[in-house]
Length: 116
Image (cartoon, rainbow, N blue to C red; front, top):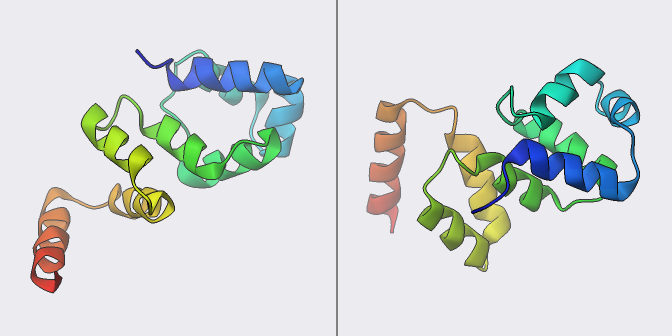
């Protein structure tokens, strides 16, 4: 079982020797918000905040993004993305499509099938 995003984030932060307040300042969020993410009281932050976290903690952005999706996407899809040679493109696709409605996703998938 994979560690929940918040616990993983806390362990990465602590291993990097970065205080919660310092990290919160770097990502322009309140310490209470960051603490609530680490404690699992908030869903993982949006991609733009994940990118700031990744930069501040020296974690690859794709790893931060995939961790942020854990628990919200099917584990087999996560495994496929992790093992794909164009992983960065697939992660970007996940970021773009997560805001789409079900109908928009269906239209997108239909167009992709026709194009291939």
